[in-house]
Length: 536
Image (tube, rainbow, N blue to C red; front, side):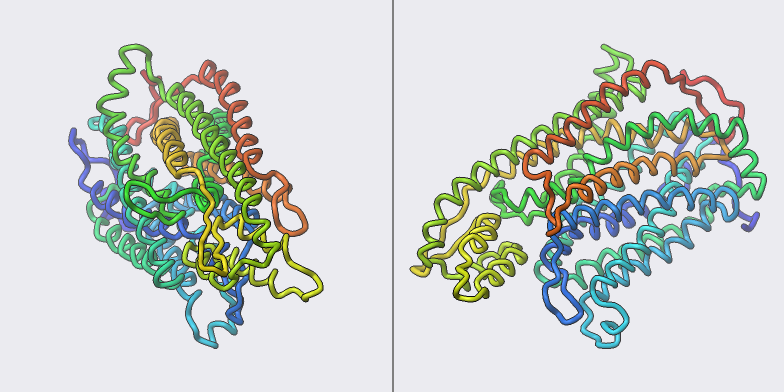
């Protein structure tokens, strides 16, 4: 890399000049990532078609597995990106190059709806989806540890007191972009199709790349260390730093296993909830928008109100914050488990109410399917149509009732409509209020803590190991969905039992993490202070 760039932090007590470019880049990049991720499960279960234009929907269990495998991949590639950045290219060049790969991934997803026969002959919609997700996983994953470490690289000893607040605002930028994309992309998917819904986030990723390039002369560019990086990193001292943090990341992985189900299991749960809330009818994938909105509120609230007040009662070390976050995660999943129990009770009641009508042949199938599609229950409509297409000597009574009960709507031949009395989505919003507080305590704290615990030559790598905890958590969720899947692609761990299973796993992780809080001895490393000093 050119040596015309500044290679060490400027001695200043203020905010480094490059920070606004990084924060702006992060807001646009997170808009693109979360916008795509928000609609992924709904796209797979309600919109995915074959090359011939026929429905090729996945089951709920299959979509959860695919979603969590994608997230696991996106958080595995940080390890590779970190090594490339720290050893060979430096963080700036690595971020810029992999951002191009990232943009290519969004382009593949945007081509899903293209009618071109040439494109369809190359890959069917599912193939374009796989290609796009792989490229996004490589691009977004590769730059993740580099961007967060690049933030810390801008600071020296004189302004290190600002690191905690800047990482908070860095996280604020993430959720600023996420909030607007979580509202916009579901609306684009429902009204304009997958091409626009995936394409708009791609445009934002291109803008993020340009914004980052514009800050090149403002940044501190920490030089790659070449082949000596491997000796320094994987020598005794480097491995000691890594293994010291491994227990922390293993427990944090369980947090991510639960947290990231906000984009999968919770979206599917919201499909069977009353989405009328505060005078608005929400789409099931839009409910997630409450999370980034709460983050925007919580970051200053925790930094300027809750932490100062709590510190008067107890010393809030990073590990204690994480422990409290774990406990709140247990509470949030217990809330969704209880809500799922309410859904099951209403399913049983609705089943009993509509079954006689189905048996008498009173259902207007066409009108019912139209009502289902109007509420983004496309897979239920297809299942009902398939059931009614069975031979006349095989009455599809049970097969008809199943999609009607799941969708919670049926239209009779006399024109009357009956709906399930689903529990309010307020239950899920309450769970988001709790788990978002847990996110502030766990994720932001881990981000800052990981940077300060990493020796100077290992900043990106240690950040990648923190991100690897996200990958491990999502692999665990994907494995649970895989190993509980029956021959038809449905889970045998159903209903509230699914949520209680993860709640109990989080309780176990919380109890065991107490020993990490007691035994871990932190040390602090900054770029201009290579001789580590014990953290105060």
